[in-house]
Length: 278
Image 1: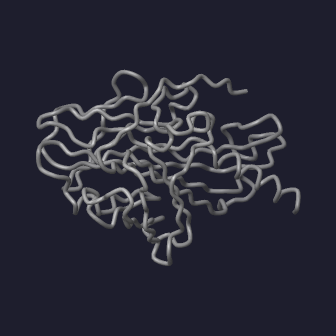
Image 2: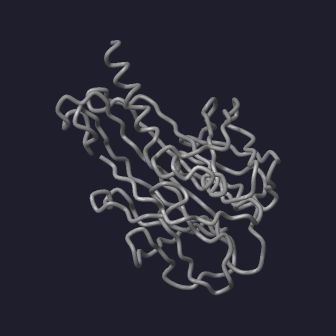
């Protein structure tokens, strides 16, 4: 028991530092614009090419308008770059990115994209899925607050409880976490911003993302997010539960992100230093 527990904990700590999916898209676009968005899966706030071996994990990005209509974006350019087929009508949109349920198992040689049965001597397995969202406004009208505060139905989702236009540095901004349509109590929400990450680039680019906020959800899945400085903030929540068949895999792990711009300040990002991963 002890051995397995230690192994499982080791697995959890390593996977906790894994990349998650987030959406990079302009918060505001001129009327009649084609929306361009990046499916980001790397060290925040850098957007990088997705490794070829992992491309199959990512379905195309989608946008959802304020009437709840969904449209698939077209991949164009680098493998993480997407855009709308046609210029978009004025209005507010959610832009989403997902990562399909994928098994990852760990043995003494490292990680393998398979379950326990397909990985010799595996001591940890999780089935990972990820969801990212950010909003974009086309035209001069402000963000549609009702749309911003409405769930779009991702399996794990971070939902603003106030109009995101009203968000200010140093002030509490309430959000609610839902898992499978139910409020998620007692889960930790962490957040960081481009303007915070640049203060420690060494950590940011070696999978030790500096965090500028941490808070636990209450019994209704709510937490007050407090952005201490202006910037583009990434909120993240991870929810794990036992996988239904323990012989196949131990954990079902869900990761969700929400991008919230706060104020006008934006980081000037230096070129990303090269790290040699073993």
